[in-house]
Image (cartoon, rainbow, N blue to C red; front, side, top):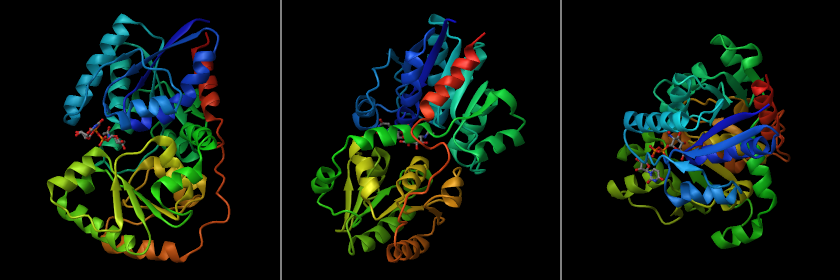
Length: 364
Ligand code: UD1
């Protein structure tokens, strides 16, 4: 067999999900991989820092789409991926997750007749107001190979008429990255660098537009985080969007709340593993905290990752600052789980399983 794969990455969460699949794929006889960066994320902390930390090779090309409205960003990804596929024909385009780059690349590929494989297929929040939900549904609809992290994702796809060999339950490739990088990081050094003790601090990430683009809502959450910060350190590595909104709205940051720049991946997951509590609106953190056995409060009304609530450490608390205060107090008064929950196939070996599924798909 000789087959070529175009792997498209573009935003921070793509790198951690795609790297564990690209690596074994590149080692597979008869398969060549071209790596294309869309440029959706361009700050070093959100892009090249991740590529280097994960030991990925540098992309063969970068479309440089940058920031913009959803339509601008998606259109630029589509145009760039289409041009790349016309110049470098591929048998399959590999995309990951639910960002605009994922959907743009999948749409462009399918329209030039190139098959699409989707890592982290089938997740559904059923909240059509989330751009990620639109990206998930559209990407899955045009995907020829749906690589799923959990059985609920397989069921969601079946309910939409997508089943059979096109759907493969391979596990969570992002957890491969987590285990690998966590293995090599000096956690004590990271704790010392942040001047915090094991299980004696709260780690926060909040960046969804629905929250941070509304000064009143953002201000109310910052106030609650400040109250928490008076009791124990609260570390909040902020996405550039969040930082800009805080400054723009003139929101004062209370003393105990430490808002810092986005972190290096290894440093971040070391803190995540050692935190007493995580507060987030991110998808990935809900899964990572489950595997790490760290209590997680998700500041959203829906989750596309119900397995983290049903079998993991995640609690969906809604978007009321008062509910956040209560839930955080309750969580801090309860012992964290003695052992991390075990989710089937979230075992650090999902990347090779995904690569094997792709190889089987490409085999004549
Ligand atoms: C994107 C994903 C989101 C994911 C997040 C992870 C979509 C629709 N959303 O959101 O699902 O959780 O990445 O980080 O794709 N910006 C910078 N530097 C950068 C990139 C962006 O400052 O390197 C700023 C720009 O002002 C930009 C804003 O952040 O307008 C938003 O960036 P964008 O890529 O549109 O979405 P994210 O919020 O990063």
